[in-house]
Amino acid sequence: MTLTPDDVERGAKITKFEPKPNGGGNSGAKMYGRFKVFTLGDESPSIERPYLMKGSIYKGDLIFIIGDPGSGKTTLAQYLSLGIAQGRSMFGRKVRQGRVLYLAFEGKDLFLLKMSALEKRFGSSRNIVYATQSMQLLQNAPRGDDANRLLEIIKAERIDMVVCDTWSKMLASADDNMHSVASGLISVFDRIREETGAAVMVIAHPNKTDKNNPGGSYTTTKDSDAVIKITVVEDLRTAEAIKLRFDKIGPLYSFRLNRVVLGIDSDGDEISSVDIEEVENDPSATDATKKKRSETLSKGAKEASKWLHEAINDLGQVGVYGTLASARSVTENEWKIISKKRAHQRSDEARRKQIDRAFTELVAANKIASSDGRIWRTD
Image: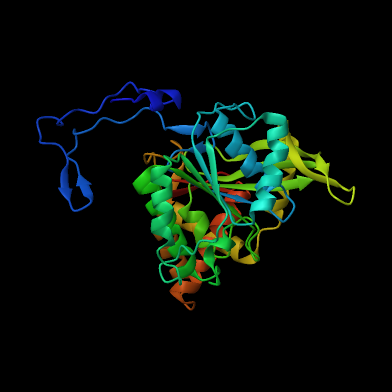
């Protein structure tokens, strides 16, 4: 593994396992167009995932930050971006320095105002670049080539994390409640991650019918590596992971927003914004939130939970790799098999939507967990 001086400066770390040059006596990877096919033994596994912020933000991940208007999701995203750009630890977590591209689709002035407040307290960094022009990333959008231009920027600037603020602004006039629209945007994010290795962080309002899911379409949660939801109790804000593919769900960061005066305008009025004050997590607040969620599961989620319980009893396997060792787990397809038996009068699409929505509610209520395509109960 060869490291450049820039890699070392940005915190790259040599792992204990090194790739085998030509792989176990074979000729190494075979190329089929852009696809590489390896023979088992060609490479050895890495013992650690390359993180930007340990325990929550990893290279190549798709992360959603969701919250109601005024919850502080944009301020948190900018704070995390600045900390990663500086290589500064945050919320007691280790951080590796990286370059950040912030797509400030909410407007240049708002972005710079918030960032100025953060810089006043935490300092600046040349490792953040930003763009404010609207982008139409869907393939059939009037400017369908915007996705290619975005990839050019990410590669040229050697970006480690892309922040998209916000989900709705990237859709042009498309309906984000349509499954095909959400999937189209997710495919762009997947291409970014595959071709550049950058993490993609997306800021989104909650779903109108499902407050634990971002955007419009409920499909986005299942396509992501992490969903972080901000809740507000009085002046305390808690960013809680309601989904983390490789780590435990639960509270990640707690913070308060403090008003910062940046100057005086021509009328003599103060120009102000907010910065972030880190606060130690309060587990009791999160426990109360989970209890409330558990008590308010929708009718559809309760019914789908019964299907899952039956699927686990009939089809569940113990000790499958990637799951809790003692847990009986099933695949989503096995969950759907039981749903078809119990609700055969409904269409496949209706049952799929019900299970997708139930999945989000049950994860948020800490009743189920999932990893590597398998699902098990935690209650």
